[in-house]
Length: 215
Image (cartoon, rainbow, N blue to C red):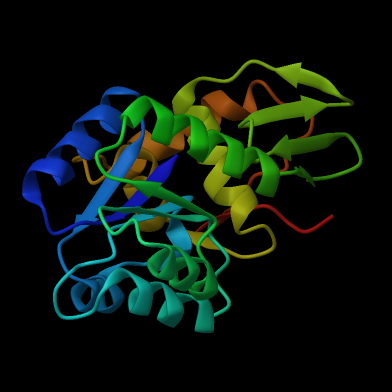
């Protein structure tokens, strides 16, 4: 899972990042809304965690801009602004949940899992395979196939962009989170994943990346 965090309190930012990275998730943080909009590749994320009272562009205005782009990634506001007027503004802007500070990170994680379960579904890959984007599980004729976390993330980024070529550097950035990983490492992991498949639905597009065709 990849989280996009907008929070101007560095201590809270570090708490969120540490908690979720220890649970094998990826976290990208921004301290103001304008910088986030100018730099984050919004389509790459599974969940948005936004504070409201942030500099340059607040969380509500930031989310409004994102929703104008037809990006429906689930969003949760984490904020000290508990007045009902802010709650209404948050939902009007397109948030899916609203959590008041101080918050418990385990509770936030549970809320995220609930949202992803609600929004996720099985994506058909071909006549035999499907991938559940909320459970991160691959199925062959409704039988679950055991995958490592790395393999789950590899399939997720490909399935999320099914029908389109996903550039090699985008896959590496998503799966390994900016670690120093070369193309050979990706090829090796793709090969290991293919060994678990009866049908090779992962297509290598020469000098570009990988893709899964739409069924």
